[in-house]
Image (cartoon, rainbow, N blue to C red; front, side):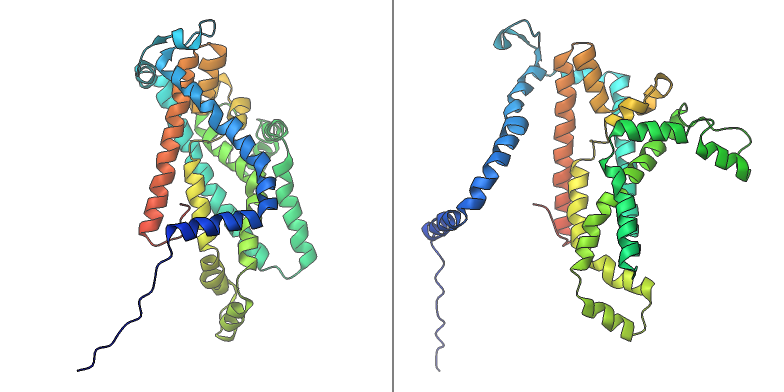
Length: 319
């Protein structure tokens, strides 16, 4: 009986990895130096201020030296969840974030699919330009336009009355049951075209031979969109979905703050507005920071949970 000898494959030593890393870093030193300003910006404005989180566990008074403030432990967090106002803010934040998440994925993908099928380059570019221009408008201008359109004597009410769908003008801006959906519609109008760019870029990387093969097999445009274009942007969709779930509690601030009149405050106030109200207006800084910490911790948990779920399903992940 002959024995078969297998060649042993030597694994690279950790020192070899370190040597390769520093060598690659030296070769790309120009890129490293270019990234230094951005890293400093992130550290100074995103990580360095985190030391202020300790004030959430104090009865913080600005006039008192930081470490001489009274420590109260978790009392500020307990106070938050005893406030019906904060519970409503959580509800509003999640509701508007969920609407923005669904609308923010469905409409850009649909627009990208239809634009990808347009043969006229000039028309395609014109539609892209028109749809992503609202992204560059400030929220003050966007809210002003929305208030004019959805006013009792605005274009939307005039259209509904002319079509006979309503008998009296609808008070869109003063009834809470409409507020969440108005925020979703306005966000779609402002950001849909901009978000479409990402999906169009992903579709441009799909091999044209796939479309040609499908056409030979008799597939129409709808079939090609369903079986080639959508699977082709699946990895991009998953990564963006995980990132957006991580930012789920950032349902917005400007539009809710500008459109949130007193009559719709129970539907418009988000966690960010709650923090602004108690931190700046009422001077209860510790409680405002506690609300911000709650939002950050939940956002991290949501992102990690979405990433873990995607990994278990065998999809592309962020981490």
